[in-house]
Image (cartoon, rainbow, N blue to C red; front, side):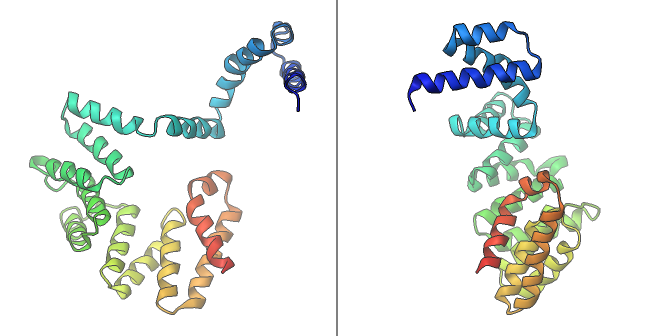
Length: 245
């Protein structure tokens, strides 16, 4: 399509949008007289702020930011930590390192935080267990999680419970892991725990039960809103692939 025709179509679309949304008519003249500059100005000054206020808009902006500067949050956290080596800044940096798969560095930070009044802080113990799990140190991760519960009996964290089940599976304790996954399946707020449960059931030869859980994941996805499907999309897609096999 010739550039002139494409430019004209964009102008027409923007003019229609201006009229339908009740924007100031001045924009019509700007878009028509200055096709490129006027169109860009309208998009940036009028449409982009509205788009950024929506959930899909915020997600798109974050995606673009991640592509342009994928390490921005990590760099920001590292800079804050260098400026002030507080427990809060250490926690933020350690969490960013976990997200990037930098488990060794994250583990060092978490261990450094587990001192004094924070010696048995469940947040830091859980973070360290995540790092050790990422490093493949499953026995150490289990020891940390066992100690976490012993020192913090009232601590409730579905993700920590899920990590414990995955640690047991990684250590070869399939029966123990199945028990934990079955408990998680009844209350975990999302599809991840159920997906891991079904996969372990498959591995254990309980194919029919695994199939039922996979199907329940998709049933929940169909009856839930778009936000649920967005945040749990990874596990819903993996479940769909499993059922297609």
